[in-house]
Amino acid sequence: MTRGDALVIMFAALLAGWSFTEFWGVQGPGATEVRIVSGNEEFARLPLARDTRIDVPGPAGITRVEIADGAARCARSPGSAGICQRAGWLRETGDMAVSLPNRVLIEILGEGEKQFDSINH
Amino acid sequence: MRLSTTREDHLIAWLAALAVAIHVLESALPSPLPGVKPGLANVITVVALLMYGWRVAAWITVLRVIAGSLLTGTFLSPTFLLSISGALASLAVLLAAHALAGARLSALGLCVLAAMAHMLGQFLIAYTLIIPHPALLKLLPVLLTAALLFGVVTGTMANRIYRLPPATPS
Image 1 (tube, chains in turn yellow, cyan):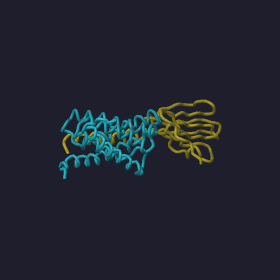
Image 2 (cartoon, chains in turn brown, green):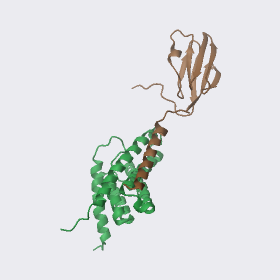
Image 3 (tube, chains in turn blue, yellow):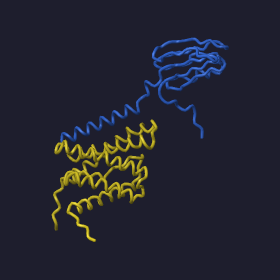
Image 4 (spheres, helix red, strand yellow):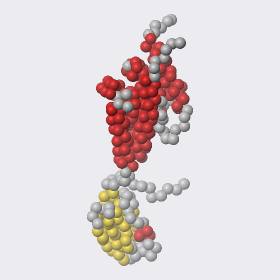
């Protein structure tokens, strides 16, 4: 092997390695904002980058939305089934948590493709 | 009618026939992913480039793609389009690298360059013309890694063939 060969192989390995980080990496900067809709109106639109908490009033009580580490979740909601809370941390574009009794919708906005809600065969 | 042929014509015909045979045999091998192939026929191209110069190597490549596709029944199909775009990209990089680097690159380096260029050229055409969907990009890391590994394998083979003592007529 000549020094040129080693250089070529190193360069090719770097290119392959870079392609892994580029195309298989976490889709970080995709999701940027969370939109909170109460009833028929947008209640708030907050950046995911800033950790915060916000209480959203609705017909059934108060839904608490928490933003931390670039993700948002429904921390507390008056719905008895806990469906809104069970959506967990929302961090990809298109992720959603809904409280029907309180008519609150929490949705992640951003660049990139939305994932499928569900797939049936 | 008699065609007058030169020694170079005969050389190209022999080597191209060898490359076509390898190409066809290889297309019978099962592949885990579309686009992943050892590219053993490229050994012939690289050895020919080192021993006989760029004209012979270019002829072998073009003849191999066209005759190979006629034999496997993919002539002018999307497979052929991918094959020829990869082959031309790899040939261009191969000739440029050999002209620029000369003896500083052995068959190993040349084969790795050719394999990477082949993969990138054919991926570019696949992505722009055939399946322009971002999901295709997820395949690229696997394809590039396979190209690197197979480039090293074919390069090692080409190096060994190139260093064999010339056959003496018996």
